[in-house]
Image 1 (tube, one colour):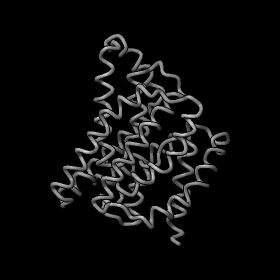
Image 2: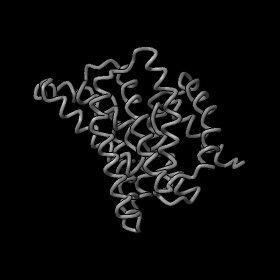
Image 3: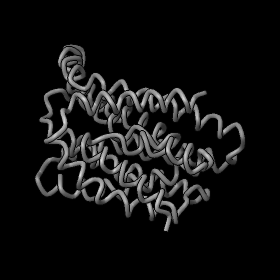
Image 4: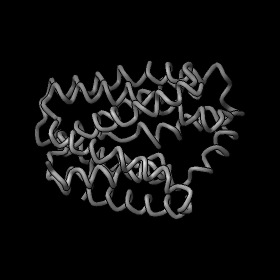
Length: 255
């Protein structure tokens, strides 16, 4: 049993439990830097980690009626074809050194994007409310599909974006969506997207299954503990520390 992997899963799970984000954003850099996985294998392993850990949350939000399936469907209409196309390109070209560089760059950019979305979480709703003047309902359908396509490419290339970035895009397009439905819709979209992308990476041999199992064993109690710690730790402090970690990881990955 790999106790380092279990401990890593526990730590990432605790962060997810406290903040609701940070799983994929921190897991992939960890797999590359600590476990020395090839970027493609780290991304594929993390996609499966995200799909499995978020499934329970998605079901819970569904039971509480916190999922807007119209928005979820529009996002999937863009994200699933985009993810399949991205994986298809990897199959056609092979994961060469050039692809490794592209994956690493995409990962770094996604980490920095996530840091920005987490840091300015409360500001995005105000931006979305201002955008409503120029975004009638007739345009939102196409923009939601386009947002999904962007997420499909980003998640397939980096394993990051389905959480914080996805929630921010939804908030910009639907600023009046209640917070529980925003979170539920984001998670409901993330599960099938990460699963499809994860299956695609698995067909390329990009999943370290034994390590994935150990990470999952550690993550479950970590998520439970993190959820209980949210009451004891100031949210601003937790998010500030998370942002610093994301920026640091993003800069390190790019360099």
